[in-house]
Length: 177
Image (tube, rainbow, N blue to C red; front, side, top):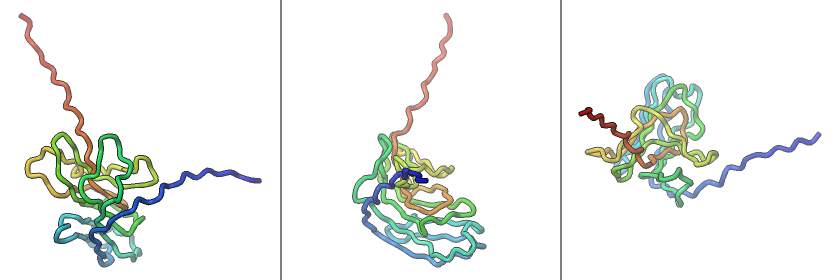
C-alpha cells in the first residue's frame, strides 16, 4: 500500500546579522535564574523562576541580539521595533512561564508595542506573547527601552509595533427641551 503525504514546507531561514551573543552557565532548576545582557544591550534578558528549568537539561542558555537581513512577512500595518533576540537553547520547554525582555526601537504615538515570538512555520510568522507587562502605548511619557512578555519556550523574540485600535465612540446624551 502506498500512502501519499503532503508536508507543508517551512520557508528557508532569513539571514541574520548578530550584534551580540552571550552564553550563561546551566541554571540550577531549584533556583531562580536571571540571564541579562550588559552595556549597549542592557535591559535584554530573561528571568527563569525556580522550578521552571527542566531537570536534566544540561544545555547552556544563550542570548543573541540580531537583525534580519530583510523584513520577514508581517501582519498588515505592523513592523519590528528594535533588535530581535534569540533566546536559547532553541526548543527548550519550561515547566512554568519565563519572563523575556526585548529591546524597543523609537516609540511612535498611535502605535502599540507587544512582545512576539518569531515562528517561521506559521504565516505571518509572529505569535504574540501575552502578559500584563507586554503592551506599551507609543505615546507613553518617559518611554522604556525594553518590553517584557512571558513564554514557556525559547526561540527568537522581538517587539512588534502595530497601529493602536481607534478609541471607542463617545456617546453624547442630550436633554430634551
